[in-house]
Image (tube, rainbow, N blue to C red; front, side, top):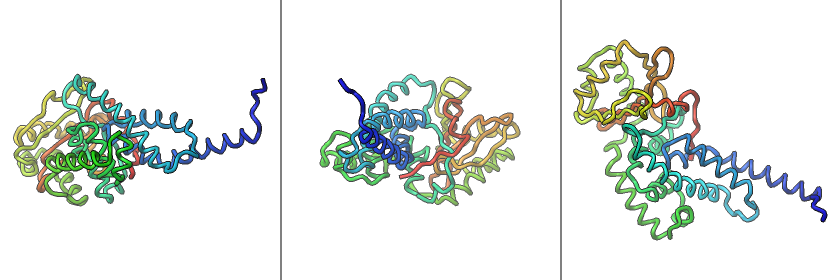
Length: 304
């Protein structure tokens, strides 16, 4: 039996492969952002993209009406499956679990909705949603997909998706910061916070912290970190005051917002992000787990 491939068939296959590659590359940053907002983990998001590419490379492109929507559906379905397994992993995680921080371009802050959606504070709010609620909220509120498109991705009718979206919006609204903060206000607050720590000005630090501020530290059982939330302005200020003179603080843009990189002996020891409510710092998120700091050495592009 002759199993040879005609030159014309080879050319068609090559053209399809090239077209598939171009489409995937064109939408890669979007797909990564979808997966990351679903999971809060860049490493897992990259795994999802790899799985999606392998599946996409075998798809008959002629049968795909909207390639972008098709790819988003694939990523969403795979992310939902991964999210459920990650939830089991988090149950045995040592200490507080925080999202994997991303070094991002200052330009991200110009897209207010995108910046908020990838912020550490918002990702922690999304952690409180059911997996399907999280997928619906991300696809609808951040990426603006229609209800029927989301329904195809999560296996629900458009009417059901609409109900889920309404419920998720209410859940998030009750937990997000009470007032929006401009990029300049956030930058100024972080600069004042940095100066207070570097100078050891305990009173200034107390003036910047909300009375009920919460500090979460993520060491993942690999490096030293508090195993429970640290609460209250006086207690949190006392912990932060120990940093003065022992570490170098460097401002950076992390997850679309101003943050601090904490360096010890020339190496990044941790990333500290803040949450602002009413001009005061109500949340501090310090990631020390070395396995979560690999993205801090280079910018990650997020888009929608």
